[in-house]
Amino acid sequence: MNIFFGENSVYSGDNAQYLDDNNPIGGDMIFNPSPQIFGNNLANQDPRIVVAGGHHYIYVTRQQYDGCTTISTKLRKGQSTIQKLKGIAGITWTAFPVGVTSNELSSISKGLIPNDLVVKLRVDNPYGQSRKFNIERERDCETFADNPSYIFEFKGVKSESLVKQEEYEGALANVNVVPNPYYAYSAYETSQFTNVIKITNLPSRAIVTIYTIDGQFVQQFNRDERGAILSGNNRPTSTSQPYPDLIWDMKNSKGIPVASGVYLIHINAPELNEERTLKWFGVGRQFDPNGL
Image 1 (tube, rainbow, N blue to C red):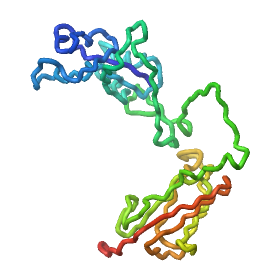
Image 2: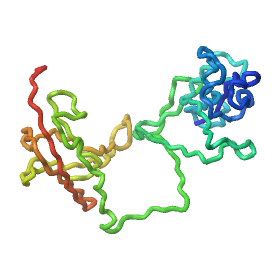
Image 3: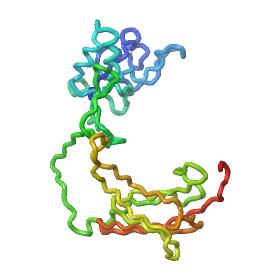
Image 4: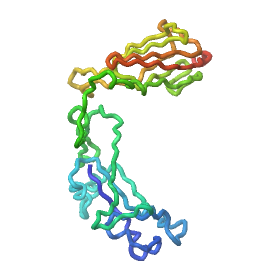
């Protein structure tokens, strides 16, 4: 991706008087947003009243990094409107920051930004086909390979294999049942005829057994969500995606709804040699025949 910034030239020249320090930050082509939100001595109808740091916009494109060479060419003076639209279509994220009074920017010689910037990327769907944006066809993305590629570098560290059983202890600590307690309804249900709770954060291989509080068997799930290799030429991914949760419809092994009360949910992870038991309390709701 490419990243670049632009500034609003309105906050330069005589208009600098509307800024707190009379510093013309709108025409120097330096990334120096101020901490000021609203301008001085302006009427409410004047658009300059919203200073918002001086409108130092940050733009991030979705094209492959090239030092902004392509988009700069597209937006250059003299280019046709069509070419400029192609360049603008490559911009995916934009925002304008506001300076922080307690941590002012440094001089250009010191690199402007006084601290290291940490960027965190959260990928919602890492299993979809990767796409490469084509700036020449502004609404077109080329699909290639199976999955997106991300490059990370770790220095001075190395992985260690788990060889002792003690190192697996606590592997089921994040397993939970939601909602708990269950009072007649849950956000997972889609109609008045469904009852849904979820047992979350399970390992790919697990045996989940549900008992009454006095130890009577209710239901069992032999879960195996290990990723399987998919076949065929037109597959969306190479392997199937494991889901970390299991759905229980609050019925026993015979398909009969369970009574309200406390239940024990036992989780056994054979591959981790770990077990855990959770308590769950639920109150069923009266059958609603509306809509039948």
